[in-house]
Image (cartoon, rainbow, N blue to C red; front, side, top):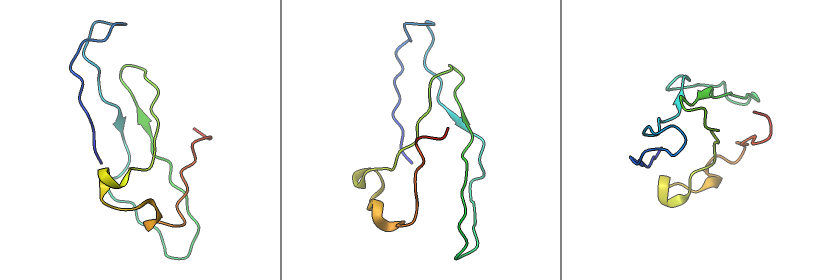
Length: 77
């Protein structure tokens, strides 16, 4: 996981941006061979929209095809 930090003050509220928060477990285990889905609950103290995406190779040192059956559902929030 990577992040970038921008410490400039926001134009809408004059405060430094707050990072999104996830309240999911650090480790999630699934039984092998059983289709499963996981919902990652996220919230942002500033009310910003939080989006998930696959990392690039330079961010994670893994190709996106290392988890071939994983699907990132970007439609159903």
